[in-house]
Image 1 (tube, helix red, strand yellow):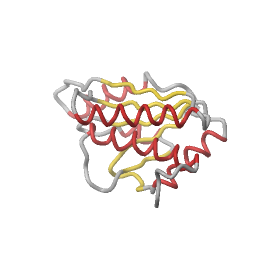
Image 2: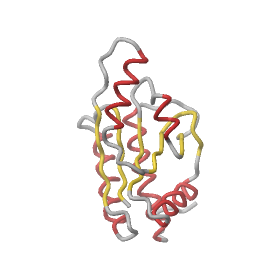
Image 3: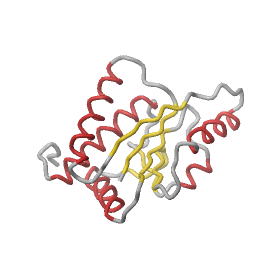
Length: 160
């Protein structure tokens, strides 16, 4: 199964980029042995439209262009479910075992994800009820992907 993160906004050089790159590389290495063939990150430019609805619509169109047909779509949304790491790992393993070709995680911009994208999602997940900057959400998601791989591999990284 291929895994992709589609995020509105760019990670600039700095600590967030370094952490994101570290977890990306760790997941690539650990995930390959578990049947996760590839991890990709697509950065979508933030819309410059004046009104919220247009911004969300333009960003949704750009995100949708990167979603292959028959993908499992996971929306990162503050209204989503709070999953513990083990449950998250089980979701990934189940989708892989069911033969999903792609699991796509989407992170919206400052206005969030369009209602259409949220409806398309098989799962909406949150990292707590707080609102997080998209850069932090990306780092946390990549860490959770790596943690899920270590859980599935029986590696001691996850000690809960």
